[in-house]
Length: 491
Image 1 (cartoon, rainbow, N blue to C red):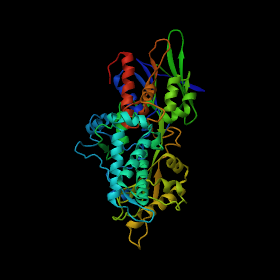
Image 2: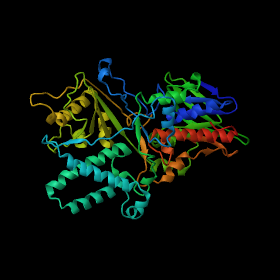
Image 3: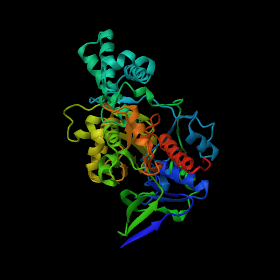
Image 4: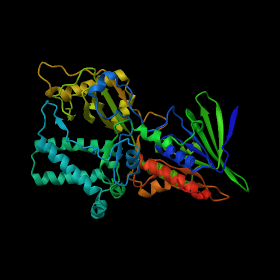
């Protein structure tokens, strides 16, 4: 039995995906009036890749960080010209007087439990981010882009030049190289790639950092999603509804789109609409686009989906019942030796450990190590993380003190999640900025040549890909496209 639901009214719209892009589309169109808008979300909540942790206990709150535990999107990237920042201040989620997040230099501990000189660490980090600034500046790429295809290749060349200029001996170079490699891995967890060799150099400048002032909300990030979603009638939001097919049906006079979906009780439904907006992740499109759309998507769009980069960045939240010692650094990285290989996947990666407050530690992990972490059971992951913290923190504790024992662990699994298949997009070697725009192009109805199937999400924004800002702006873009087509006012 298939339940057929006609979305009726001045315009019939089905939005697929309840992340910030989908919620933005549905909210804007619901606010416009004379439109019937249905929002289909496959999971049991709105937010998509915005997801807060939920293991914090009341006993920890007295000394808790002012920032919530986030397993997904964490920051509003940039303030000036950022509509999400303006929305957050207008709704008093944050105050304009709240300072932006400041990044502090991590302490780095060697495998011999010696803290590496902050002067050396600082030298490498400062040089690394000076090179990253060059890589992200259009005017500096004229010659570099001809020599190097990737950001990683460019950085490696700069490092070799600097080592030669400093006349380092073998030991000194090896130490700086180990720090340099951790800088690259840290940047991978920002850009979303497995390796900076995957990141295209010639168009790296297209990513817009705005004023580079990043803001973390003092409440769960989902508060922004909840605020945006307010205009959507509750009865028009279908959770636990997985879309299986998006089919355009045309005859000699008209066209419509039929969305086939299945609920958590295995009830099948069909939603008939004039417009369908797909906001599913690029990771899901890579996996399912060939079978999801009928007729198949144009080849240019399939090529763009294949070419664009889509990686995985996971977070591990570590909780402690006992108060963490004040002697522990706010942030640190441990450099393991080759002999320490029992938990090689994490030790070799050497994640950035951030002490959030006196009961919580946050670890960022990306690429192959992130995928490996998702294969670990919670007991296995707990054992490995505890070992890493023991090694990283040993030199900061008194000789007769034991490393604090973690009491709970929570982790994201964006790659394993069939509704995301990764975290966010990047401009990959082999792709180009135009691929973001090609993915954003709507599919037109063959008779009327009006947009019937539209696309939104962070991977459809050429300047703000990988961010909630890009997702939000893409949702606004597609809502305006539909309203223009209907001849109605913009949201």
